[in-house]
Length: 154
Image 1: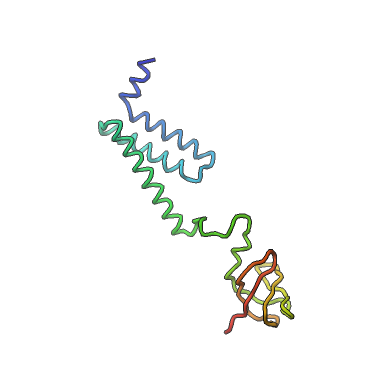
Image 2: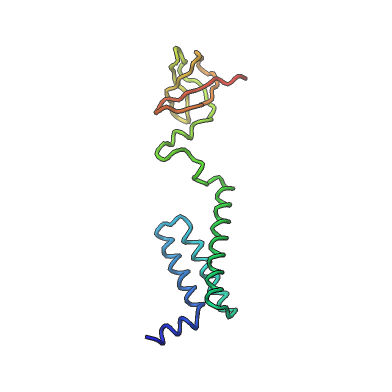
């Protein structure tokens, strides 16, 4: 049994490559990318340990630094691509994403109530002004399934 641990102690490259493989398998279970980047960092450290004889503490510090840097770069890339979920509407309220959309009135808004077109359907809408069919409006708020709109002055 002691020989087993001595092999690992004398071969840190295999420890980090195995750790990378385990983290990549964990990523397959759905960790949203963190297992992926940690696994890649571990494999890179394993390859570095294979080439350079570094001590265990240096390798663990290198693994931590590579994991943080890769996760940060991944986060920056997601933010640049517009896929950062932190700026989305509240959970289970996707209609909040409708705010800011410009559309047209399909049923005249009279006495504060009417309908507007969104993609291939229509939504109930309300406005403080009476608006004619075809009037361009912007969605400013969502109250359940009713959209609050304001006319766009052209």
